[in-house]
Image 1 (cartoon, rainbow over the protein chains, first blue to last red):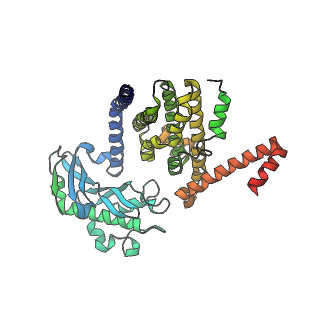
Image 2 (cartoon, each protein chain N blue to C red):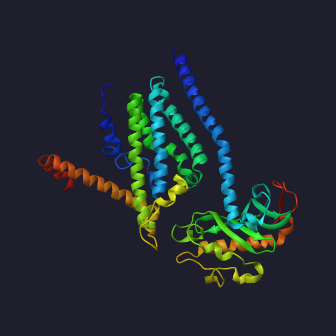
Image 3 (cartoon, rainbow over the protein chains, first blue to last red):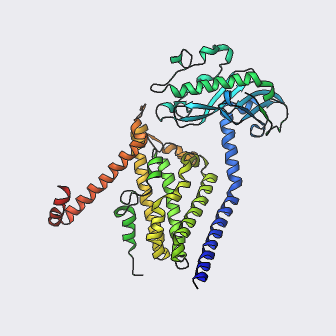
Length: 216
Length: 230
């Protein structure tokens, strides 16, 4: 009899599991499309903040290429590059590198570089820097990231691409030098990467997502 | 089931047995997200909805669940509800969802929810369980919002910043800047500020309770409290 009791109890638990999972599956099903739209819009919004929609006429979220460079892009994992074109002519690339040496872990960035090699804009996508000190890298908190605009490898030189304390051009924050130092270095490395790989980045196949090439 | 007074349930949830101030449950999300009013409100409402749905569901199935599998079934119910709420928030309050991040799925581990399922909903009918879940959730939300207001006002000198994340563009007018050009008070924003703030709220509640008791029965309390406060 105990076996029978156990069996019924187990079946009962199973039924609850199936009903619960079914409910989650149903919710997933009805929200999936909306979530995908949200994510796409959020992505477009952050991309358009640094590469205005007037500059390009292609669909940024789908015109991508993935590349790898642990040394210059801060991660051994594939990094997405969005490509902006107008009438098929390359305008800019938006790299998504990581600054691995933030004060509190990795800082994810968006770095937009024009085809000529100038910075169009930089945004921090995610970070865990100290609120009130290091988080001034966040556009919501301060305009510090705008300092990068218009700069290129050539106009500042290697020394210029440092925070002021290290002899460079970019402000550090009161009480926080490590955070801006990490961001400046990551932006500088992105420019280096762009310089070395520009033509490969714009390989002209609109549906190139998934194409990977290795480099170090 | 003997008659339960809804007023008593409500008083328990909101004040006497407040999940955050008295039971001290669900502290992890409570301390982590209360750096602004809107964050607190967002997580509070999600928790409230979870509490109501889980209490009602648990109450509905209370007679068909065998005692041996009671806890796993409750966990299953709560996990399913939270996952569904998480998906819905991602769909309809995408920005807020991104800010609250991991703390939405973590509602599953908020002990206040399984505690109400086990202690109340599994023993009571649907309507009292609904009221219990609602008032407990409201009690929890009010603490999140109060703590959020305290920390936001001290930390950034604003109230209701980012209200548009929850109320759309129309919510922007809600933001209040208390002090212009405020430089911020880091301690209030960082986790220690959360602990200190919650400690203060608990202390305030205890002071109010003590005063009330004193007014109700001065003579009795004097003798009873003498040992405790000495």
